[in-house]
Image (tube, rainbow, N blue to C red; front, side):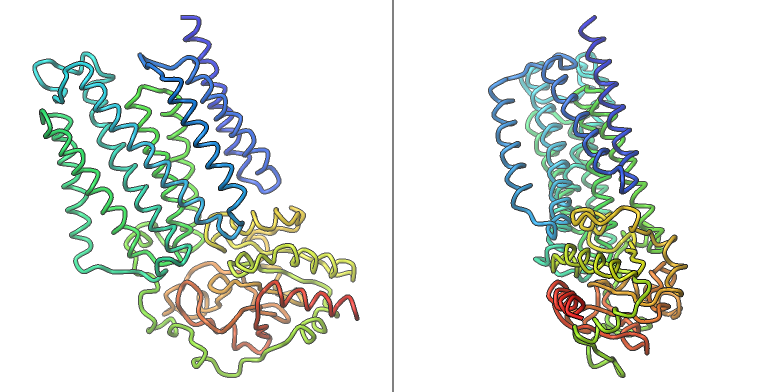
Length: 488
């Protein structure tokens, strides 16, 4: 009993560390320490689980150590080799692995316990009444089905999201004919097969039905992400993170581990809250995002796909002209976007900001909640470049400052500064909160071309009288601008 009480107390400490870690992740200044607190909590949870596992768990230390070695090795290699630009894909992949782990745990526990007590697969309502042996009886069986379903959907959905984020799969929505009916059949059919398998089927039929559930869930994960356009991928990644937490929580019920139940629920709840916050930032409902189709058409009220032939009166500026504009600026706002991540320009952005500060200018960085390809993408990149926390301004705080700002420098952002969102009621992004960069005295738009962003629509900011298009690689262009300023 003392051992149990000690392990329970340590589990409580780990849970507290998780909660404190998540709380500190909500602010840029404390995010790093929050991550460290959560990591310590996870280490404590793993150690306690291995030393004093709950229930009648028999551990094979050879298997445990082998798994730890392989996992730690792969994690270290991925952490070293993956570039910051690949972080969104990495987050999506790790979400998928979390879901897959929950599925494997549920399947292994199902087969292992049934074989242990019967030598064959039988349902919990059979004459032998497995509910007297298994954790929670019917609850355990329901947890098996939900863990397999949510875990598999998370795995295949995350692979699809990773493909869209990396460009290996088109970021455009793919709308299959009869997709809503197909989705309903996959979900309801998979659930029916799973529940029949764990409650009533006997022999090899139980295995077949659980594999049927896996197959239906795998296809469901693919078809649920296919219709969602690249502009909504940050929301999808956040939602899949929530799914992975729910799957882990269900796996906790399956194996009877209280901490896994709590930790999974925390991840699920925090992921869902973040998802809703991001939906609010885009002025769209979660249901609207999941239905998909955003950016499907290149025609309509949004002004088309934003091809170069659709723009007139566009003015451009080279590095020398951009440097001359910045020379006389008393205030500058930098707006980072995914183009900054692709060009890995965050360090030179910081250098340019420091140069402007040496010249007496006020420098700030405007952060849109869905800029980039994952939640907090721009915060992570700028933190990597050691940009001071107090210079990072969120949308609500910075939007009133653009009217009094001399120059706004946009590095690879597009949809989050598109004035159509507030000026064109027919635009697909109408009502979406944007950064009001167009209200600045001068806008320097650093972009490779006049191509559309992930929303696939025209951006009238390119044609504004106060906008200069600065064509080229974000990092290369800013390096040239910085050189011109230092020489002046």
